[in-house]
Image (spheres, rainbow, N blue to C red):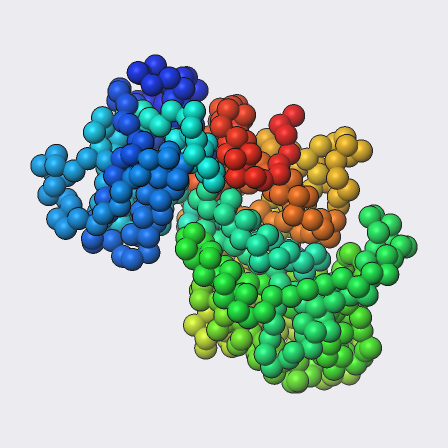
Length: 550
Ligand code: ACM
Ligand code: ZN
């Protein structure tokens, strides 16, 4: 029966609404859990917006912003009010317009919407659900709701319906590499804006790498003044070339706070990544004593994995890392700090007297699975984990952190396929799925690469992103450890916002259905129709660049 209802709902979504107002569709991405059309329409233009005073200030702001957006897009004022005793007024049928009610019985991040002919009753238990309900209502309205001007020709009606919805996964992430190429605060904000439309809630911000250090650290000013810049960059895919042009930039701590605050208003938590102990050449260019040899080093001009990494033998390295991570922990209020851990070549450690002395001091020994140097990396990881715990933070690391011994409480980001995530979950670690095969949005969107912007290679079309099943092959007992899914956008070959958005969109929408929808509510053909009939128009109105559908 449920299945039949879902099929009917999906069919109805594809059909034009046949009520009095023409052009009404229910096309929502990500697809809500259940939609039931009940007949008739609600006139949204000029409708008042009423918010329960039991909601907190952040939730009320969401409702108020919706009223402002409605007024702007329809050209007719949608008044905003916070009436006392809203629930009893609703029961008595006294309130008309949009009515947002706080209901503690609704799941965290979930919501329900009841669209009648006179009122739209939204129920949510907190700001996240309220926000997602608003996003769903916006998706049901004409695209002009996303714009900056009045949608004069738009038909401001909603079809009467009952919608009930909640996300499948609590972690719905999108990553951005601002180290290989630097993107301004405004570019990052626009990135966050479109994430919010599709109900993503985690922004993984890659802030340091071999090619540039991007976050101001007060105790180490040269990290940005020196490490924030490289004196040239390879041209296109030619590893033997160099443009010789100084390139770089960084975010001041005030700018970081501005982004964190902006994201928070969109319901998005920012997870900063300081990638260690590999991918650290830019930091080492500023403070050469961080490396095994003492340098000199230079922020890298090329892409790939540099052999020079932080010296894990010297105490000064740990002091540096704790000071840096201390400032990072103060800047980012979320519970997680990402400490990287990927692609750390061990050649220097094998030769370094400091690293070898540390291995001896700790009694680390190679075994049939891992080298002593791999165990040394585990030591670095757990020392950072312990330090961050004193700041009330948990760590996330790329799946290499599973090599050796991982301390309880770490979360693993599975990027080299899904095995890391499966293994982590089987050992009781939380995991986030972000396999290269399905979620590396730097990969090409066509095999006809001559007609695509220059890129890193690979092939990741929309349907492949859409088709990923995060829990496949994971035993029932381990599934609670799969927190969710994320896509990564590395920017070695991406220098402009136009190109960045082209790689992101519309794959971000496919990602959102993987993150939000139960498998039985997914359907690629239906999704594609939603894109062509509605979602791509939203992108046009909001001014995003995107890849056209094949
Ligand atoms: C990675 O792509 N090196 C995590
Ligand atoms: Zn060393």
